Length: 623
Image (cartoon, rainbow, N blue to C red; front, side, top):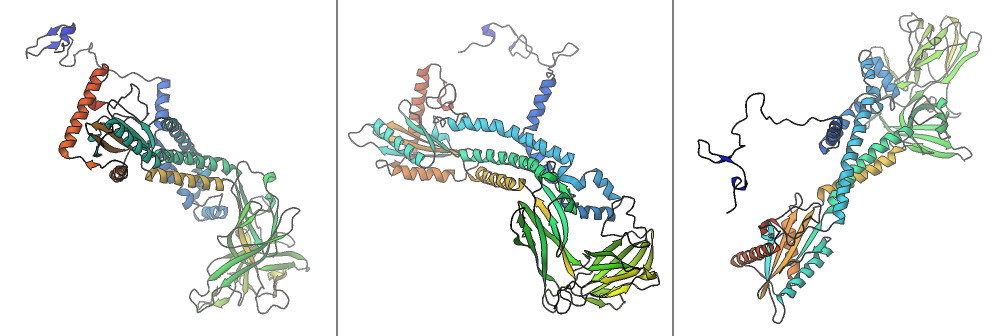
């Protein structure tokens, strides 16, 4: 009998309850200031830094940051962004004068370049790196190590099978057992397992493991997310987006001065723009005829372009909705279109003071369009004209004009005339699509007492107060019938260069493949052990899943069936034989452990010939 603690040299006391306890035993917490309360050690600066780093690099924190990043990106799809829709931002300020300044201070119009959005993805970037690097090191060691040793008692595993193989006459049972394990090792290796032989005293076994692709996929997934963040962060600096309105016949050169609006990345300047030019030759729109399903709606849009690089030959191209045109690495998208009536204004002396094709913005599906004409010079006073264009004009019962069809069937242009200060001389930026009549006098239309000017293509009328004349030019080619082509069309183009796009796509696909591998590749271990038992050999099979693996039992059964074909007339072991074999195996393991001297006294807690240091970083004792 082992000696008690008091036998080894301590004193004991005998309390009133008659139970022997050491002299230093305390039945309760001492009272008073002299108590020995346990206090936690204080963390210094280094300790707090380590704690913060562990919190930041935990998988839980990475998931929370990923969720925050997704939530933070939501305002970018609700509120117009300056980088993609600057005109929409301007309109938002007009429609929401009280809310827009507040949102602007919160960087809601520049979500993806805001400090708070950048802080989230930088923290996510650091967290992912802190998660991936240690796990990659651990996984690399696991890949280079041998499969774990065979457990001493395979029968304790849930997925366990065994068969009894008779030893043919004249053959050694140990040789039959070794041959059975060799055959099993070959089959497992052929099935993609990494195998290792572990033979002990009187037993032969093979340990096999596969499914490392699962952890590899997990690491690839997280590394790909880091790649996406790097591609977005670095590639975004070389990205730019610009908008340009082109009227039929107009050309565009890829320079900062030729853009209507331009949003460059932090590394983009005028010198980095690729030189090229493009011209809008013609814009075709096919409308569904009235009376048919979808009548009056546009069926197809095609912008016919001519592009040219310096020193190159002109190239023809087309831009359709969702089918951009690639020009020297830039992608040109079709955003919108409309009519651009050509107007000529002359002063009282007959001098031409204005001649241009003015883009009128569509207001409805029938292309009722609104536009503004500003004449800053050449007149006694600055002129402003607010016009409505009707491709197919009709009069409502109320007397108001409207368009009933988007094509040019009966085009009419009406104009209200204002004279005064346009507000452009003080240097304040003004939109070309709006007119502020606050400091102007209305000369025609509305309550002025003078009817609004009404023109059809090719017609000319006098301006009020003898200021001159205005002409609605007919842009149709000679010999054209009807009004087809009498009014030019315009297109709104978005010119975009995104060097990060291909990299983001590549890393996203890599993350997808890694995630699929991490979810659907099972990681499992298989063992086959053969033990000679007199004139027979007991062959045991067992499997263990690293995580959820509903197909493990079927895999063990398949292994048994395939392996039995290479064994001498094998028969399943009966319950009595299995119990006897298990008892014999336990006795053998007990004898081996007893003779080892320093080995554990319980063979159920060790593996066959288990080393002091595990040979596999993931190995735990499996009984």
